[in-house]
Image 1 (cartoon, rainbow, N blue to C red):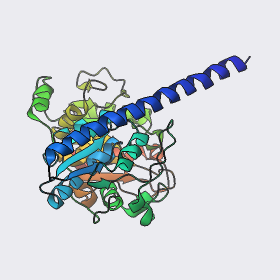
Image 2 (cartoon, rainbow, N blue to C red):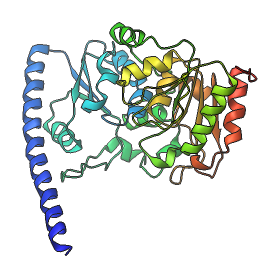
Image 3 (cartoon, rainbow, N blue to C red):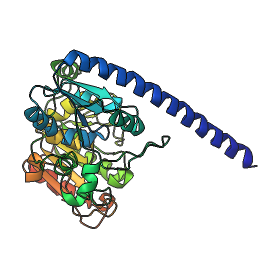
Amino acid sequence: MTEGPRFREVWIYRFHKITHIIGKFWSFAVKYLQLRLLKNRLGNRQLVAIILSEQMGDIIACEPVSREVRQRHPDAYILWVVKEAFADLVRYNPNLDGFLTEKCPGERVQLLRSGIYDKVYNLHISHRKCKYCPEDPVNPTADQIGLTFDNYYYRGDLLYMFSQAAGLPPMTDEPRMYIPETIKESVLARQLPAQPIVIHCQSSHVARDWPAANWNKLVDWLLATYPYPIIEVGLTPTIRTTNPRFINLCGQLNLLETAEVIRQAQLFIGIDSGPAHMANATGAKGILLLGKLYDFVDYLPYSGRYKRGEGVTILNNFGHPCAELPYDWVQQAVQQQVGQPKRV
């Protein structure tokens, strides 16, 4: 009885694999031609690539790399290689001349092998492969300093670690978000209430999350004891309240709109995720909930203000996952950040 479904699964996988690989080579050929034409127009200007294509938080945290590379190559044409889903994070960066969307790590390998770039700053750690492609992405610079997925968080925050993977000095600068006026106007048009507390409850990795029951308990307490509206951002809602001062924006905002909502918050409360990096990069005050992640116990992904402990309370019950972070700790952190409760 299981042979039929198993047979279909195998052939569906093979179909997706074959079509993906064909698409990869076609995408590589098109991009190589585009880059070759670009180089012809550039003349003597160098074509420089910054490569960090995925993970929202990683890209936001590593924004200072664009400033460092621009300082090193003031006359070069600088591209950031990024997945389409995260293109808006680099689209408006004034230190870049453009960006190149990456289909998959296999395509990245093909472009690097082609020698089309004059200079490459590859921030990726070796061996994060595409699930379909045979190419194994390798970063010799990261390998030379012994940087792997098993130890990267022991080396410091994301910017500090990834900058070294790219062959740059260890960096600890403030990350920035570049939010255009059109995005600010689109958020303004929503007529959201002023001084909200913005929360983000779910990450792309369940090991980073705090229980939904705790989030709902926290929001109920916030609404009962403070006059501030609560806005939830992210992809999937966690909060169930019908209180009119709670606003669910999950799945309704693009990346930069989310960053703008967080920028306007009087306080951001969230788990270790992309929106937490947005809070750091936009100057928002924050309460961040961390916990043991794989074998990493004492780690801090953030550079700049949050690394210095400015405007942020970072909660970590060391040795325990975020799910076991005591509820009372979060409540006390809110009282320290916002002040003692005032009945509404």
